[in-house]
Every structure is written in structure tokens, then in C-alpha cells.
Amino acid sequence: MKKTACDTVFFQIMEVLEKVHVKGNLSYWFALLSEAPAAQRLFDFKAHHIQEILLAEMIKTEHQAASSAQYGAGPGDAGPRAVECDSCIGRKRKATNSCLVCLASYCEDHLKPHYQSQAFKKHKLVKACADLQEKICSQHGKLIEVYCRTDRSFVCYLCTMKEHKGHETILAEDERNIKQNELKDKQMKFQQRIQEKQKKVQELKQTRESIQTRYQAAVDDNEEIFTELIRSMEKRCSEVTELIRDREKSDLNQNQHFREQLKQEIANLKRRVSELEQLSHTPDHIHFLQSLPSLCVSPGCDDSPSFTVNQHLLFDEVKKYVSELKKQVKKICKEEFKKIPPHVTTVQTVLLSKPENRDDFLKDFIHLTLDPNTAHHQLLLSEEYRVETRGSKAQPYSDHPERFDSRPQVLCKESVCGRGYWEVEWSGMGVAISVSYKEISRKGDGDESVFEHNSQSWSLVCYPSSVTFWHNNKKTKLQGSASYIIGVYVDHSAGTLSFYNVSDTMRLLHRVHTTFTQPLYPGFSVYKYYSDPRVRAGRNILMRSKFQERIQEKQKKVQGLKQTVETIKMRSQEAVDDNEKIFTEMISSMEKKHSEVIRAREKAELSQAEQPLKQL
Image 1 (cartoon, rainbow, N blue to C red):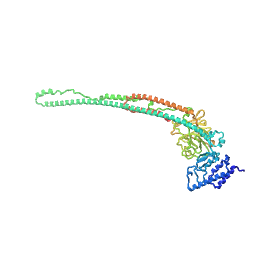
Image 2: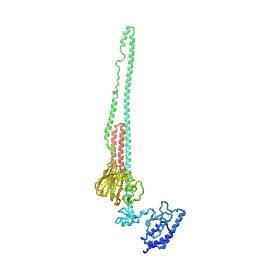
Image 3: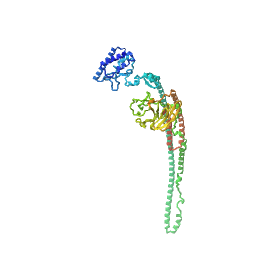
Image 4: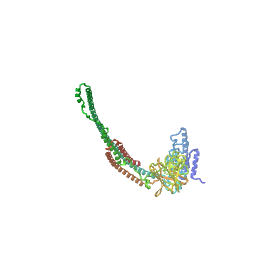
């Protein structure tokens, strides 16, 4: 076989390496030769010139290695975490750059040929990195620098001529520039939306403060009114008490007067009895007969004034007055409170309408992101964490407490605790489209860690010719087959989970009615790796027009809320006026109920004002 110029140079370089007894990593020198078939101009140098360069480099490297061994690590030596130079012999120095053509990292000295020699002019240098092998195609050993839009994957040039032939491909750098511009536009739009919503939030905060101020004033007025009512009642109570005491004093004085009069009459009668006793013993008959007629006459008035106390009649007027007042208060409590509208004492609830078509569902659309910390080792996630495939080889994922270790399952980062809708595009022999509590077990092959076989998860299992629903190890076979796009809708508060076939129309496959106690996380599982199973979640189906429609709808709702605030103010003033009229007739026992009405109304309006804040 005839030797080529490349072979001649190769053997000459090998002779130089043998002369200086080079040992260790020769990737730098072999990388220099590896470009010979593709770049013949590299060997335009004379052989003796290459020998001189390599020989000088080897001697310099050995000298530096010996010096480092004698005096210890120098300032340029690689630390425990630094990227080492692949061409240093003995003690490794810290690499400053990596070459994507040579697939090696070099220190400052060994990097000089890349700057000085024309042969390395087209080599691409980057900051030193330790993961150079990840930038190499595992099938062809070439640099990965092309992006396949069809499969959303990164490939080398040879891949574009074989496995990805006919696909839409573009240089990764060009795709980055395009996406970078799109990212700037999206960032600007999101910033505008943030500013608009912050402005709305500020307006709602001001409305909240106005409500609080107004109702505090109402509470203060309420306390002032009832303080006056209480004082009036206390005054009336004092007047009634004083009236009773005056009546009591009058009756007691009259009683005392009659008592004194009777005592005097008793004394006079006793004196007359004594006189008659003396007269009965007189021996003078003439004196007895003359004195007897005058002593037989009763002293004073025979008809003494009588005084009868009737306790039942004494307080009849007072009791009648108090009883009548009590009846009036009870009547007000029983009848007048019924006139107060029910919405005053109950929080008004705004019922959200149920979605009827795909556009309605898309209003609650959620962009899903697969959580790489939960992915099983056989699952391969795309660079955007939106596409999941299953392969025969285990992926080099690090250990993580949230990772499923026995079943090919993965959860999403997003959770649903209100309303949420997402669409899943699947292929292959079978997939499970699930929702699960975060507490589901991740370790072991028991039912507690399988989506379909426990009470922590709900799954729709799709095959090309059949579809079933699983929950808590119970299987429900569904009619028909599943389309390759499945829509999932969750209404957490209503306790409903629905699965739909999505095509030109939406057809309900299955609906679950239950009570969800925790936030729900979307999850997926793929079966039979040899069928090339694939799951794609979070498709970009919301166009700019949809966002504009949503913005207009929310602006319309905000305008409606402003009108509602005005209505609330007017109705509140009417309620306050009616309230003042009603409660002027009440006693202090009404104060508690009146305060409850004011507070309940305040809570209802604050709840309505805070609802848009939660939705925003």
C-alpha cells in the first residue's frame, strides 16, 4: 500500500514522541492528526518543522512537569474542581479553553498552536468545560451543532443525511437567534401584562381601603346611634324608677299619717276607759248619774279613715307600659328583620359557568413542564421538558427522593387546585394519562407507586384500539377508542375530572365525580419501549388572538366590577338609611344583631373585591 503524505507526517510525529519518551494522555497530538483527511492543508508544513515544534513542546512540558513535582502545585495547576488540560504530562494544569474540533481542553501553553498555526484557524474555542462528550453525537462521533425542528432534538451533520434525512433542520446557533428574538417579544408582552394587572391590583386595593373606611364609619355611626338609644332607655328607666319611688313615698306617707291618727284615737279611748273605771267605783250616786252620759260618748270621730293596699293595682300602669314596650321590641326583631334583603347577611357567591366548547376550555389552559426529578430512568425527556419517550437504555439521572424507581412514570411541575385544562398528544402502543397527589409513593413496585392502582391517582390508559379508566386498582372499560390528542379538564372545587377526545370537536370519554383533598399534579406513563412510545404535553395552541380575547374579557369583567361597586354603594346607603329608621325603635338588645349585619355585609363585599385579586 502506498503511503500518503498524512501517513508520512504521522510516522514522523510518532518518532518524535518516542524520542522524548512521551507517556500519558496523547489526545492533543492525535487530535492534530485526526483532521488530516478533511484538511490536507495541515500537512503543508515541512516534516522537520513539525518535528521541531512538537519536540520543543514536549521538552517544555516535561520541564514544567519536573518543576511542578519539585516545588509543588503552581498558580496555573488545576484545582480539585477545575477542568484539567488534556495535553499536560505529569501534574495537570488548569485548562482555560476547550476545542470543539479537537474535543480536548488546553492550558495557556498548549493552546498557543490554536492561535499561532493556520491549521487550527477554523477550530472553535469555548470556555473550558468538562462535558465535551455530551456535545458529540453518540452514533457518529461528530459535533452536535444542528437542531431538528421536526423531532425537536439536537443532531450532527451526518444525522441530517441519515436518520433525520428530509426533516426540517437548522443550525443550532441560527435557531437560538430566532428563539432569542421571540423570547424578547414574549418578555415584552408579559411585562405589559404584568403592568396592566399590577394597575388593576392597585385599583382593587384602593377599592378595598374605601370599603373598609366606609364600613368603619358605618360601625362608628352605629355605635353612636345605639349609645344615644341606650342613654335614652337608661333615662326612661330612671324616670320610671323615680315615678315608682314617688308613688311608694306617697303611699308610705299616707300610711304613716293614718297610723298616727289611729294611735291618737287609741290613746283617747284608753283614757276614756280609765275614766269609766273610776266612775264605776264612785260612792256618790248623784255624781255617777250626772257624769255617765258624757263619758259614754266616743271621743273623736267614730268613722276612722280606712287605707287598703292593693299590690296588684299599684304597678298596673307601670307594668302595662313596660310590657307594651317589650312587645314592640319583639315585633321589630321578628318582623322588621325579615324586611332586610338576604344578601345583606350572606356572602354573595359568583358561580362560574361551565365550559361548553374547546374555546371555553382553552381559557383555563395550563402549559405543562415535566419534572426531571420525578422521571424514571427509562424515560427520556426533551430539552424543553415537554416531550417524554421511553428507551431501552437507562438514562444517567441522579438519585432523587421524588424519582419513580420501578415504573416508567413522570409527574409535572405544575399543580391544579382550581380549574385547569391541558392537552396531551401520544403515540406508540400505550400510555397512561394521569393526575395524582404529590404524596404518591415513588419507591418500590407496589400498588402505592403505580398511577392506576391506588387511591392517590386517577388514570386514563390509552391503546390504539381501546381505552380504559383506572382508579384504586379498579378498571373501567370505556366505549370506543381514544384519539391521539386527549384533553384533560379538572375543576378541583367541583370535584370533577374529565377526559376528552380532541379533534374537530370534543367528545367526552369519561368523567369522575369525587372530592379532591389535595392539589393535583398531571402525570404520564408509557408502555413497551420497542413501539417508540411518546407523550407531548403543553402544546402551543394559544395564539396571540386568544390572549387578546382573554385580555378583553378580563377588562370587561373589571369594568363590570366597577359598576358593581357603584351599585353596592347605592344599595349600602339605602340599607343604612333603612337601618337607621328601623333601629331607632329598638332597645340595647338590638345592638348585637345590628353589628352582625354590618360586619356580614362588609365581609361579603370584601370577598367580592378580593375574588378578582385571586383570579389575577
